[in-house]
Image (cartoon, rainbow, N blue to C red; front, side, top):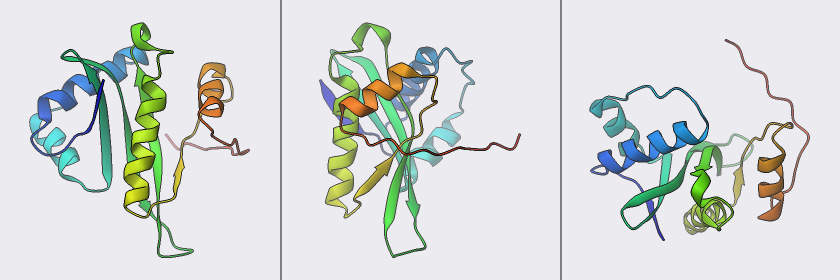
Amino acid sequence: MKLQRLAAGDRELAREMFRALAETFEEDEHALDDAWIDQLLGRQDFWAIAACANGEVLGGLTAHTLPMTRAAVYEIFIYDIAVKPAHQRKGVGAALVAHLRERAAAMGITNVFVPADNEDAHALDFYRAIGGQAQAVTMFTFP
C-alpha cells in the first residue's frame, strides 16, 4: 500500500479519492471542476492523503491546518476519513492517520483532532483503537 499526500498535479487521483469518500459515506457526489480541485491541492493548509494499492484507491482522508490564537501553533482537523468497505479492518485507516500525524509532527504540529458522531460506534471504536482520546464536545451547525 502506498500513502501519498496529494498536491498540485494530482488532480485525477484526487478526483478518484473524493469519489471513493463519497461512495463510502453513501453521499451524493457532486462533480468538482478541475479549477476547484487544483485550488484545493494548491493549498498548503489542505491535506488530501490517498491510500492506494495496485492502481486502486483504497481510501483517503482530508484535513485542514488551523492556526491557533492561544499560542503561535497549528492544529490539524481531520474532516473526512474513509476506507472502501472491501478494504476496511485491514489497517488502511490507521495507516492514513499515522501518516498524517507523522507528516504533521515533522512540521512541528503536535495536535490532530477529528469529530465523530456519538451514534457512529464503528468510528468511535476505530479512533479509540488507534490511540485517540475522546472528549465531550457538542458541535452546532448553522444551515
